[in-house]
Length: 141
Image (tube, rainbow, N blue to C red):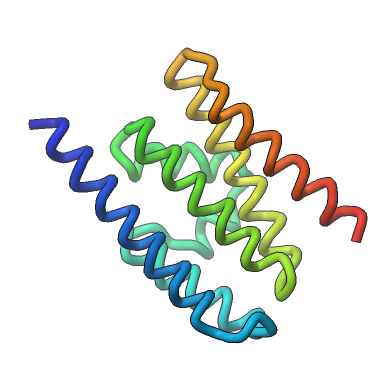
């Protein structure tokens, strides 16, 4: 029963992420900051997650809120963190402060994931290294 719930939620998160990516990629690469924020906000709203409220939190508090909202599910938290990374990458050119905040929240989600799963994951570690690299390169801009 619980596995069915998680599968449905993972599928729903995947669909939201696909809509987000299609929405952002369907526009020109020079889209404005407002369009990027609008697409990300609408995608997260489908998950009943308020992007503005999330951005107002510290990354650690944001990851805690998302953890609670996603029913303490490590697979869902990892997918959500992945969607934050993709959103952060897409927002990098048009809105660097938003991008940085999304990427920092993603890092906090990956840390929360490691904490809650109590296991080391090469995949999560690689994702954290990717985010760190993006944050370091964007700070140099």
